[in-house]
Image (cartoon, rainbow, N blue to C red; front, side, top):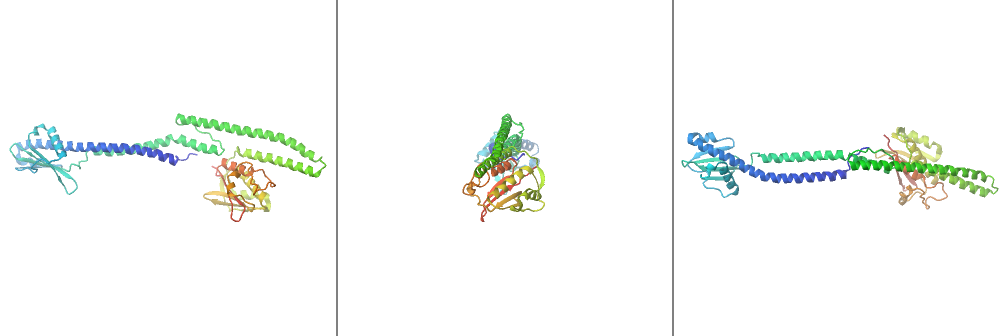
Length: 431
């Protein structure tokens, strides 16, 4: 069994990754925005400085062709006797660009240079300026929208976002792979809690390997303890049956019939108690291989020995892969339990939420809802509902409960309004 990562665990880890990614991304965006502004200004200053120097030189060679030769897709140029911008704008950004222009071309430091920005169709702003030439004319220019050049910084922001997303995906994939041993341990712990034994692969990080090894050792110890417990009880039961058999023989020699009957009943009760204990202990270490069973035919065959006391209601072709022996033991125990408190019972086979379930309903005294959990414990008896003069030792239902836990089945109770008790057995699914 290898189920997906726990939603809560995966969610928390994903949140951590996402938070780290967002913090890194936010910091990068702020950083790149600062760089972006500096890059834009420097880019425009460099292009304008080159334009002005080249334009001035070209004007000295061919004044009439200067405007046409200097105009490009991104720059518009013209020469006139009046500046387009009559005075420098009072703007920190423009002052910074002017300083950068001079830094790129120090020869322009002594020339009047006026800069300004103008709106273009409400979608951006162009950088415009005027530089006075040596003969007194003005070289006017206009640089395309200062925010539309897709600068390096913007590309870097996009790259940062893509890298952040890629690293988050890689991190989650790595987490998924690393957490596989943890999921296996979680599944194994659940299986062990149901009384089953499973070999845990000792792989993954060292801490998880050590934990897996410890769980394997624990399973071996628990399994050995149960085997020793069962073996010890088998030996004790065997030793007890011998004197009980002798006492049963002796009862035939007792002249007092009432005393003889009392002794026989006591011996029979002790023998049945030993049998019940044996079945209960066996349920805790029973193993069984799954097989395909036609449930309707299986039920009729198993319940035929109870005669008219049992009414079976089952659809045809109810085929499921399950464990024959555990189902047989559980079914018999529940039927015997029902017939202890009622003269008849109805066994109904049907599907419920994707599982096949077997309902055993009797018209006996029923069971209060507050006792649905305690009745699963060994030797529990409800005196007001189940009188002590009835057969049994309070081990039938606990035995069924242990069997269903071991084989991933289910056991539940309900009290119909008409009275009695309905015990629902969820048929385990085999592989």
